Image 1: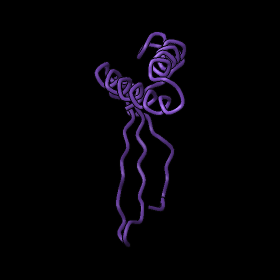
Image 2 (image 1 turned 45 degrees about the vertical axis):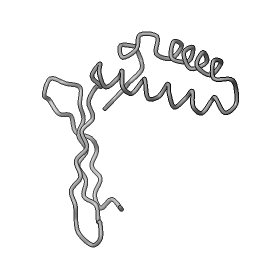
Image 3 (image 1 turned 90 degrees about the vertical axis):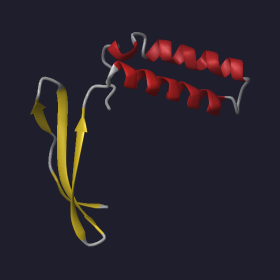
Image 4 (image 1 turned 30 degrees about the vertical axis):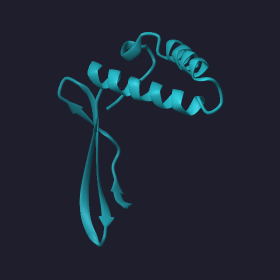
Length: 95
């Protein structure tokens, strides 16, 4: 898909910290409008995404080291970069 028009994100004032980007693209000769909305993750989405990220990271690292070491390395990385989970300051997690 090739962008035909790309506009800067516009602020959506609905009480949430969200942005919206509207664009038109050419797809198989037809003009299609795409709309993307970005919002802060819910606690449930964060939990699910974190479980998925941890499992995938352990899977990849386990090719290079024992699984127990991979699990510990992923745990330490999460504690270092997201010490307060979803509420970690200066980290953005969007859905």
